[in-house]
Length: 371
Image: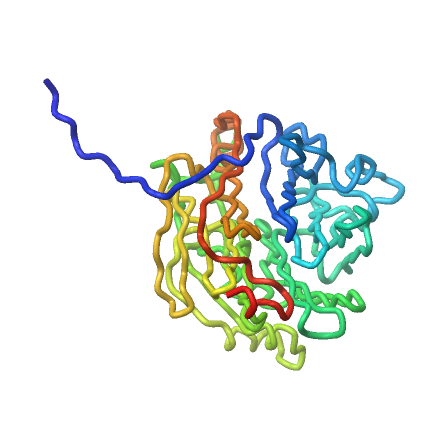
C-alpha cells in the first residue's frame, strides 16, 4: 500500500457568489447598499454587455442595454470595452472605459471615465482625455477616487500599457483636467528581470505561429489609503509594491522627472493584479503566481490570508459593506495568447468572497466612524 505523501497546504474560507459561463470578467465592485456590479472587457470573448449588475443571480446590462451597445455616432455616451468599475460609497458607480477592444489603439472619445448615478441609473458625467494624456499605447486599467481634495475631488488611473510608457493619470473631477505622472518611471514600468510563473509554468506571450515574447505590463494594481494621502500601486509584471503621496502627484510644480524622489518602496508583495484598501489601512493584494491573497499592514508587515487552488488568477477586489472581500477569479493566464492560440480556460469563472472583518476605505470623510 502506497503511503499518503505530504501535500501543499491550502487555507482561507471562500464562498461562491456567482459563476460565469459566458465571457471572462475582470472587474467587480460592491456598492454601499450591497449591489454587485461586474465588467467584461472585450478581449475576444463574445461580450454581450461590458458592464452588468448581478440581480437575483442573473446578469443585467448596466445602466441600460443601450449604453452597452457601441454607438459609433456617439461613442462618448456608450461603453466600448470596460476594464474597471468602482462604486464610491456615496451613490455613484465610476466606469473606466479603455476604449480599446482587443488592446487596440484607444478609439478617439472612447477612452473615458464615466460617473453613473446609482439612484437613477443614469450617466451623470463623462470625462474624456486629450491625446497627450491617453496615448496611442495607453490601456486604462484601474481607478481610485478621493473627494476630500479640490472642489469636486480627484481620480487616479493606472496606464498599464504593454507597448508604451506606464503612468498614473491624475484627473481633476471639477473641470476634467487630466495629466500623466510618473510617465515611464521605473515604479510604473514592467520589471525587466521578472519572469512570471503561474501553475508551475512560465507565463509569456506564445503566438499561434510558434513565436514567443516576454509578457510585460506596466502599472496596474492600485489602492488608496483611508485618508486619501497615499496611493499604492504596482506594475502587473512585477512583485514590487510602491507608494507615493497624492499631494505630490497633484502638484504640477514638481516636474515629472523629479517625482520619483517622492516614491516609497514597500518590498515584495507578490505579483498582483487587483488591490484594495480597507478602512484600517490594510492593503489587500492578489498573488497570481501562488493562487493567494495577501494583506499588507500599515507598518509594512505582510501576511497571506488565503491560499487556494481555486484562486486561478485573482483579478479585481472589492470590499463590501458586509465586511467581505470580493474577488474575481478569471484564469487570465490560460488565455489563448499565452498558449500558442489554444484557449486553456475552464468555465465557469467565479466571483468569490471571504470574510475579513474590515469595512472598505471610503473616499470621503466617513472612515473614522467605521473603524
